[in-house]
Length: 566
Ligand SMILES: [Zn+2]
Image (tube, rainbow, N blue to C red; front, top):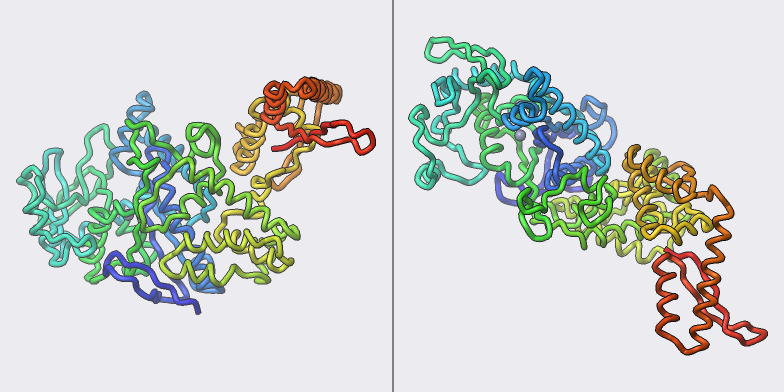
């Protein structure tokens, strides 16, 4: 079996990975707080841990005891109770009852998140628990913590609350490598005298009338208090991971920013409630993401959501295919800081075309999915090896680049193995393959529309992206644009389409235009007016018409032919 090695934030070394139960490898990753559309930084853990999930499923393949019959269980939660959600609900739906307004915000945001995840090529997790469905479990774990002396009921500025007592846990701060004394010395936390220690954090807090709440009883020192309130953020992951994965599981993942306080506090809650010294054996964290060298922020104007990248022209003046975004996020090692730039997206777009064309030999895309399912083809061993060494995706991608560069000598098996490796990383699959075809199924006659439409190829590209993202609204809009230009979009399946001229006479008209431009240019050349002649050539080229100069073999006269280019 392939030996897996990963960097462990908890032990600060690269460790060999040995699952607790090889028939059910268990992984938990902190999911989104559904108050706003996910930004491109949120896409990083989504994609990184999707690759890890795929690698685990590959290494631990076959029948297992996970609930789906496989050998890997992947849990990613949805945080649907949070003060940011309340604020958004009050702002966006001021006339609705609070619960309805909150449900609207969370449903709409979660739906968009799922759409983004699919467009980015991510598998759904085995379980996707929502915090609001585990409130009872949270109240129960909080009571256990009170009973064990790790939590206490107190009254803060905003009412009654239950706090975790950090001083009750001797090794609190182990994950983030922070010592409690240092925190107290260094932290300039306003003294809150209801706290036993300034670092004590909220497990449950009382809700005001305009905040969502549940009634929960807590007994502390023989006295029972009912607090109509809501859970703190950290407790949900402790409860939901235990519910689906047990007290101790294999891998816990998330972004670097979650190490402290979120993951530190998850560990404190779970370990103290269960009396274990570990919540998860391996803690993996992805690095930060910047946009064009700067921290992403709404005020700097470089804040971009996944939805905007997929469906609008906000970033770089065009829509981007989910596969291109996926490649761009995997090109940098997951623990390194990542700079998300327009030039890197443009480069990735080219890589995807190269990958597509290398896997197009022998029509490999059309049957690679079936072959992989049937176990008839495997990804390159060296790519699996790269991923096995702390998820070295940059190395895996550079191997793909090298192989694509040598695709001219591919035989059928080579092409299928290349395609299955690209498919394994889910950069391209049989459904979206057509979106990366450089030429596509756009017929030559229809390309004449490029004469009239200055952004013709960009529009064709947008249609490919929209098809691949199943964005029906955009598909309809673009179809309409072509219709107005006398072109009918005909969908031929697998993300491909052709354009057919509605009025064939227009074609003749365009051909006339090109011919007359060529005649003018030849006359200019004869008059040695090179500058004007070149101008005509360049103008046609900008419209996708490439001129080719040659000589008539019989008369020796200069003749110019032309072809439609991208
Ligand atoms: Zn979490």
